[in-house]
Image 1 (cartoon, rainbow, N blue to C red):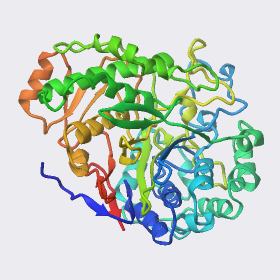
Image 2 (tube, rainbow, N blue to C red):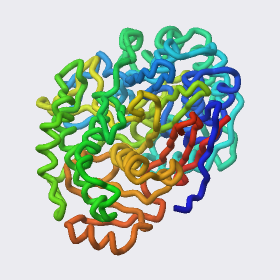
Image 3 (cartoon, rainbow, N blue to C red):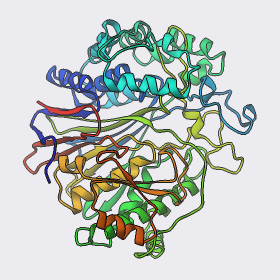
Length: 525
């Protein structure tokens, strides 16, 4: 397969992300002797400055880490809880889409420190220096940066928060963006650590700016959950994903549902059909159980059990597509995904988000911090396990993954943004790498499908359109239509993903791939 970019090979670490300035920051920290987590935090902070439409300090982060020496894999849940004011009776029949009532406690900054405590080497002041530099002295706006602003204003012309960020809405491509308040917030974090955000001046401004919707206890009591990842065996590899309240379980279930088939021997239409049907089952099971496990039981082991998988496999008709009922619940879609690895072979699969584009469209004055609108991911249904409650975390679409070899060493790291497209894309990536033998760049660029009921953020029920990039042959499209799929053609590279991939070769060399569907790059040392 001919690709537009070559695989990047390195021995001493590297990074892959959707924003070149953020990749450069990660390399800067690696070259200074920083660990994979030091460089990951630097990348996370810079991308929060230069790509705020997708992720920012006021958002959430989820990490899967692999430590090469100990072969330890950990899942970091850096999502925030609903504040003390967020009770069911505060809302009528729907959530506020914008404004501080749509937010949960920001979790990204706490995730930095939870990861740094375990794997950090350099001081946080040095790690945050690139982000502070870009916020204080400016960076040139990319085409994507400008288009995101224009796109939001077209949908919501009434929003005014850009002024509170110091961003001019008339900004042209290449124009310099300076965010003085955000620079000051980053400096306070660099000087005072975690407390520089969750206590003190910044916390005071968040509490007062939200009219007490969040109080100091909401912020100070926030905790990053660190636990073992969900793991499933696939073709002898161990695939590690995010535990609830994320929907990482879908990826593992999808893989298990198709493992009894030799996917490489199936025709392209047969393989797509089988995988799409597995996707539908994964989302149906997700809808049944996903919630915050600290509030309600979430039995992922039952879903991933041999008995359940065997039962669900019988429900897949190889000749006919299942088309379920309609749904109308919205979930979020704007996210950033990246990978960092160091010379020691440690790596992090990192995804962070403010949920919908520019999150809550609300910035507590004087902070430069754009709050998420993650609370809209809760349910207002009294019978839902995902019912909003103070201190509870909503169901998440965010998921990152790693794959390890039978001996526990690292094999692959990968992921993408894209809301409900994420687990569908990650499914296709792992199959492309393990079953079809593609290189990381081939897997990044290969034609992809997405099955959606509407937008990528709608509640998936099994109904909807099978959207496929038009590079797929007409014969395959016709076969899929004959099986009952409602097929819609996308532009040649119009799939809603932005993949980054890493493979560790047998000799320890790192092979990096980065999606041509998005700005950004993979780079090594």
